[in-house]
Image: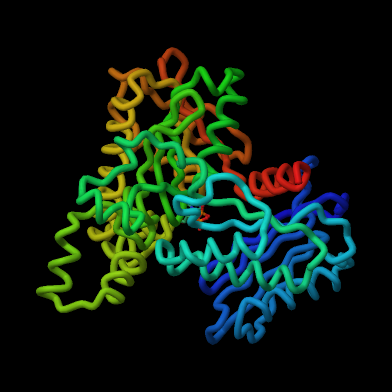
Length: 405
Ligand code: ADP
């Protein structure tokens, strides 16, 4: 982390509350200056801690954090110790990342009691995430009552997916009753990165067909035609699609039935198995991509298989989206793995010369925080690495909502 301490007036405090974590960043939507950021971990558990960086100094403290409110109180105090009184600093907004907007929300929205009760209602679709987001909202509302709060939904960008892409082929009555459809996630990142890619290429987004590959701990792919997504790999929840750190991604739905009927696992146990003990972790014991790579270098066969399954699935989505788009202009890698793992990028696109996709090994090996092209000259498809910045995107969207209010 590298943050400074200037220009706080007009900044936005971006909060991303998970079930046991609270990630935050104080960022100015116009200057892009990050004044402070941090992470509270293991909230409600033993061994909770806060890492906070402000004025170029990072502090980590082991501190009991029984709930999100206590965590946020401590965060506010840490800001004050570093010279920022959040309540009087002239913040433009608190911007909350909310995972699931269901069928109700698809625009950044000013927080009201009614909005919070709607987010609560949607919680059945995201039982691990939305309740945590709400707790974060309430904590911030109590401690910073005079700062407008805005919610930005992870599903929003994919709201207008074509029906053919968003509809599951199950009984329509059941699907409608229970709001079962493909929503898509990581929308803030896919939107931000695809816009940045167009900017980098110097072309209007409306003219570009792109495949965006957001590969972090969670991972998702999207096909974007002229700035609008036409398909994405995550579904009703962030479990569907690509192989992830701890999530299985696509499996035969009958596996779930089998696990229940034959292996006698409960719904809770299956949920945990597929969300927390699968993906790379399930296959080789490690969820972190760097650790998987290290194991492969040591000759670990399970890690090699995990990697091969990961790449195989990724290539399947790339292939499907190439066909969906018809004409492909750019493939864009982003997030922790996508921005850093050059070998994975090369393997994901190996042997696609006939489709105009050729990676330049020297460009691919460059490490940088800036958007860059890694394809060779002469190919018809630009392959890019574009670092994502969900916090900045949330800050900008929050500021825009407040300006309109
Ligand atoms: P999150 O989904 O939690 O935001 P990130 O986007 O930070 O995740 O991505 C985390 C993943 O990125 C981890 O699997 C990590 O191993 C991987 N990663 C980070 N740096 C590198 C690197 N230099 N090489 C390969 N993988 C990396």
